[in-house]
Length: 418
Ligand SMILES: C[S@@+](CC[C@H](N)C(=O)[O-])C[C@H]1O[C@@H](n2cnc3c(N)ncnc32)[C@H](O)[C@@H]1O
Image (tube, rainbow, N blue to C red; front, side, top):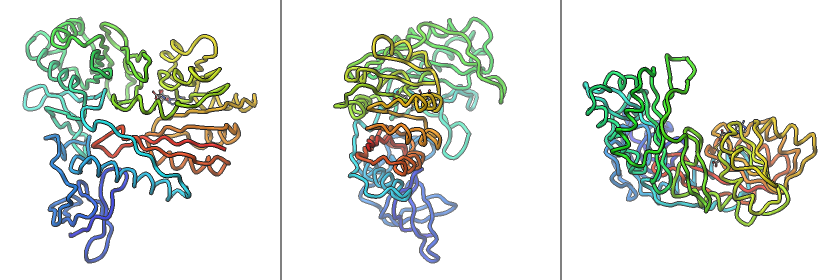
């Protein structure tokens, strides 16, 4: 079937009308303006090629489930992502939006964290990602969106296992490995996800790996067990986290804790959220390790960080004018509304699920002078913004930060006021 591609939609595909019946079809790896032949919902042939089409930077592009946009120039990716965001906000009923501001940096080698599957392929242990549209493992040799240290470490893991027959039985238990490095790749943390944790081999393994990857500062095991069983922490080696320098501050990120994934754009994100804002009281909801709280504490008399996984935040947000609250945002806001607390600024950076109806309703009652909403999912963002606009907030700024080049994911920062 022949389709003229009209636009990209959220999720990574292009869409357009089929010649003949005019049915709207979504076509992976297409670019607006192209005429393509589609077969079984896949791009079969490009009839008219877009001048914005380029050769992908990764040999696994297309088969791998990770990236969707390597076939388009980076400028095209950014322009079309911004168009997707604008359309998603407008179709939710958010009109009269301010002009969208775009922020980008290096489009390759940006990821500070990757999680790879580990498994035997044709008798040899390999690392990989999920194959596109499936749970099958796709063995990979490279991942050019990841900081180079991460794939170098993944290869070193395989080398250590190959070179030490004594580790072979233990290594068969490895299901996945997560690798996390700081912005200059000077330190590395590793988590091995194992089916079971038998024997003293983990220390042995980490010591061998450290010889090949001196940046490795710590590692831990998580036992995944049989399906449906809760994950359990297992053996540990070295330090339990690493120091991460961002926005002129040093953060302690415990192994497995959330940290923004793009090592080049963290400073810009912190600047957008915090720069030029000051006052008596700021709340940092969904605070993580305190990425925004720490900077806000420089210009607000009091900063309250709210986070469910409180360890790293509590360690840094203490002392005069700083408070870490271990609670869900909804729990915290219910109490704050009763106390009629009124901050000058609320920063919120929820996971993909967004704020949800109750938190939006509570924020409507708080009536803060200014709020900054940081979102990694434009669908839940649009839903939440609509609720907040309906409760009296106005949208003053919209920023799209391309924290995830080559993929359909995007980060949005929205400044609201009243
Ligand atoms: C997208 S991360 C943002 C972290 C931080 N603002 C940053 O930029 O590094 C979301 C954080 O919200 C926390 N979280 C998840 N659900 C929560 C809830 N209901 N209430 C408060 N925090 C929550 C997670 O543990 C995670 O640290």
